[in-house]
Length: 501
Image 1: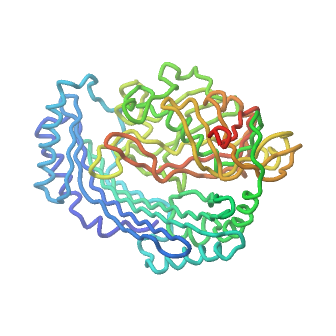
Image 2: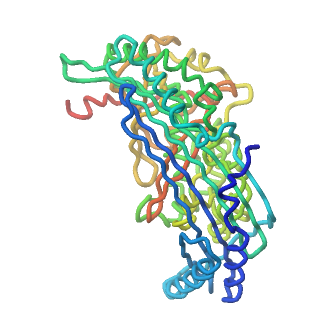
Image 3: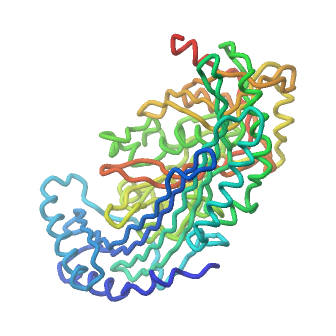
């Protein structure tokens, strides 16, 4: 396990916690917690192997969140002194007192064991912030130059984002937790320009963002050299591909595309705060309302979806959430039926669901923790078929690879998605790429049309580096695992025709 960042652990973490929690107890808080955070970020962008931007950032601070007379109070600052910690408690209590007259739901938190002096570090090998910037640029430039040298590639865009997140948490119950996690996402896009027609086509890598370190760029967890070697040929095929004929198709969807449909139509729809209407003003609501728990037929009987905060290299994987709840796994959809939600301690207690699923998260010390998405994943069939076997079951259909654009309504019910690549399937065989396709459905019709899921050999973990939610806005990383899966009779649109062109 990598060492905790010495610069972070050198901060007066215990002194700040002792001062804040002692003051909160004196002022009669029913619950109080202190978070100290240091979040380092780096982003690099290249165009045609030339650096366009390189930026490093750091967000450091401390936050107090408490419950006073059944009402939340919150305050945050940037000075790491005991005086500041005490002042933040006083401010948070004042906020709670001002808010109490308009509070309609008394805050009570679901029980959770006490974790004293707990430590957790995510699974990575090489801290990307310990790698010299010239070394990073050299690797990115090397990969870009390989793409640029290929026939048919006119431009290459590349980017790299890395985050190192340190958190210290302490509360009145006696829990104290120190955590560190690292995540990274590289991306490469090849561009072919049709100067005669005045248009262009692009093809992007389908590698996922991951909870790994710099080793990800050098062959651990993904073979970038192999993928980039294939990209020019895939792009050339796309430029010559025919436009799709709209209609009903069977789909075999690869996890590099299916993760996004899971994210939008299951992940967001089963956040309990959304289902209860708490996010209606901004992020939206959900068709999967609480009265449908254990009755809603979300999809076909082969559908088994879990939430977790524990899968190795997952972007939403943690040891403990921002309320001191240990990471865990649970069922969201089982045998096609809605059986669970994603919760924090307040939502779990409010709806009498027992223990929280550990989904509280704040993206900085300046923000209050809110209920955020876990790693929501479609599980494979233990003895399920390969992707090739799923394709072999299709007479007329499409094989869908890589995410691209999407659109879904505020209740997470009506949607359409495009992809990096659509391949036409005829009589169980792939016959080539097609262009201008999007698949359209309602959530329950789509998942109800899932006839089969692939075996563990088809399973991959993909996801998003920055999922947005809350007011003020916050971003959170989240992964979604999926096998390849077969869907029958899905509506395919021609996007050019739909755009009136």
